Image (cartoon, rainbow, N blue to C red; front, side, top):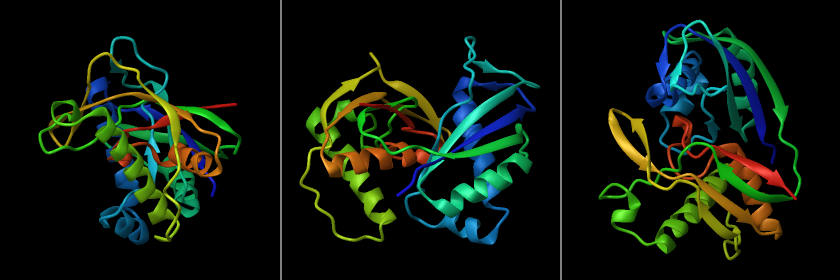
Amino acid sequence: MTVFEIRLKVFLLKDIPLSKMLTAEAYFIDSVLTKDQEWLTYHETNQYKLYCMNGLFPLERDGIYKKEQIYTITIRTVETELARYFAKELSNHSSNQMKGLIAERRIVPRKMISEIYTLTPVIQKWEQGYWKVQASVEEYERRIFENAIKKYKQFIGNEEIDEEFQLYTGITFLNRKPVPVEYKGIRLLGDKLNLKITDNKQAQELAYFLTGVGIGEINSRGMGFCNYRWL
């Protein structure tokens, strides 16, 4: 397994407020997938989309990303052909909000990971909305792990794997209050997390995988994008 990272420079055609940033990025990426029949089918298939992306960088302190300025979007995936397609096509692609300029692809090195931490909120969809209204921390953590395993099993072809291992030794919520994000016209509440990764083989494999696909749900909308620290 290899995690690919594409660093894409984009030129904004409009001002984009922070609340609309990830939606604008997701639309930009979705629209390049629809240009090719193979990737259109991938986009429309009801399955986990094994890529994720961070918000625009550098950050804007006033929360408005400026028209006619250049920013960087970091996209990661574990799918080789998708990484190749993104690196080739996104730099020549435009939406009504941004234009691709330069895309650089690299491989995220495999080293012992001490922790992973999210830069965008982790989302879990619960029947009554935000998880703290209806679930315990233990239930929240169980769903984090189960979601990660399901995505990993899809990636390896739904083979059976040993699921009896500890992914992390500690979880820290980095936000004092829920982080709101917009998704399909509604507001979802999420959390930013730090996970201290255990040093067993399965945990290290899964943690590396998560740096490429994101933690939690709707990662292709920019949710649950995580960075890492090595030992």
